[in-house]
Length: 179
Image (cartoon, rainbow, N blue to C red; front, side):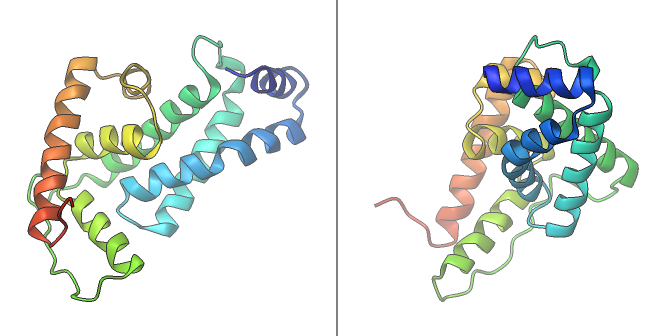
């Protein structure tokens, strides 16, 4: 954890300094929003709502931050719990292992690639999506993913391996090859 983060967290926890908290939000809002955007398969409004819930929970519970991990790991743990609570509250009844496969537009554009990646993420189980998102999109190492999710490192490695294979197969089937 950076000394700046320690200073800001202390100012918020002890003095209820909202400007210090604003600095933490500014520093971490992009990664948290990106995490939710990937987890919700591109649902911008839902991602914004979940990110807002995360920062509200972090603010109201900041005195519980013990500094045993970095502030970003603690914040991602809250984000993961917010997502878990949201998913559980919806009581999804659809088969989460059923791939959602949509046809790729023949025009290769940045928007097309983004849509293909969202569709590819949709075929992953929630656990695979979380692990892939945290490792590949957020650059979190396996030990930090374990702290964030509460999963064992071996389980995370399995989710990463299966998820990467599913993504690779999906993208190859839809015209993306390594060259």
